[in-house]
Image 1 (cartoon, rainbow, N blue to C red):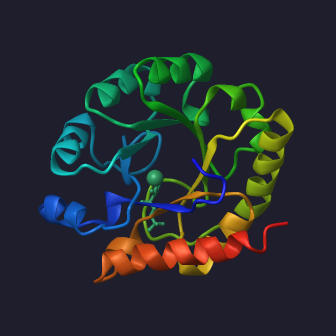
Image 2: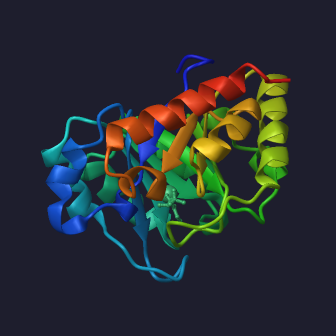
Length: 226
Ligand SMILES: O=C(CO)[C@@H](O)[C@H](O)COP(=O)(O)O
Ligand SMILES: [Co+2]
């Protein structure tokens, strides 16, 4: 990924699931489709699994970014890989074998991502930062769309960027939760490049315009990067 390339991944959690193929067709400008898998255990909500991901892959050419908010990623990751996920992101808080899981994902040709909750410090990534393609910094507590962005996330993003620079690695830095044109500039100034947006895209009539506004706000943030 280019250093100064801001990308948007609309989250289908906020889409009209009864018309998913039409919803997927509407997100012109999206670089990934963000797929929120929730198990009712790791988070207090239940969504969709590998079968729906396979259906999404049938319906769109846009690569799928699977965000696994599940308690047993070690067991379920192979299912999401088989379903065709292009990025598989598991939570640091949910696995005892993060490095092994990341290797497995990469061996199957997908990008390996690790996510951290708002309550998890960036230092938790110390032993895995060299072994992943993507770090997802949750900017809300996971489980639901439409929540308010947590401002303290910006400090974590700056810490993560500093860690990556020091270790000379450049995973994609993704943010998820409360991202809109109002917050996109700040997260990009702090180091994020892949912006997940659910309600700020699917809550708008014109999705292409919504994606463009988020991208432009993010790019504007890059110019005030410290
Ligand atoms: O993973 C999650 C929520 O846990 C997200 O991907 C949400 O779907 C983002 O929704 P918005 O905050 O953008 O409405
Ligand atoms: Co998500």
